Length: 219
Image (tube, rainbow, N blue to C red):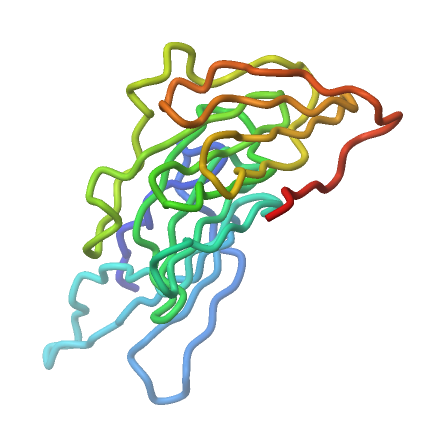
């Protein structure tokens, strides 16, 4: 049969192309549907020429998935249908929920993402990790267009923030945009100055005797 070009590598073990885990087709159709070990679903068209040969098959991604547990979801505060997801596979994705398309992504270089949160004005996206880091991103296209690009916030002297060695369990921006609260499994809550984009640490709050699972600001 015709050999198709393998879909690009993704997720953990990105140097290896994904392995096919499931394969099927509709009776009488030229299309093959396959699932991979990277949690993706691809479509291939096996078109037969009059001479019995096959045209080269190019894979088309129809469902993009994280390659590990997805523990963080955050809705964009100003753009309808846009949201971010963060997973233990070290990936952060930006999605259009209306047409189910992937608009952008960022990689945390091996660190496992546990949560994510937009600042209420949508200027910053914070992502916490299993290793106790907090990444803060900006979007280079002002959240417009079909391709979004996340980049390091240039005003930060230290990136990512790393004031604890325990996992980050929750992130919350204050309604006035001035403070980012970071809850950790070390039972502490860390407060950072988000007003000028430098994210200098303001306070370290103690008092809980176990992991801080959830928190929120008063309005």
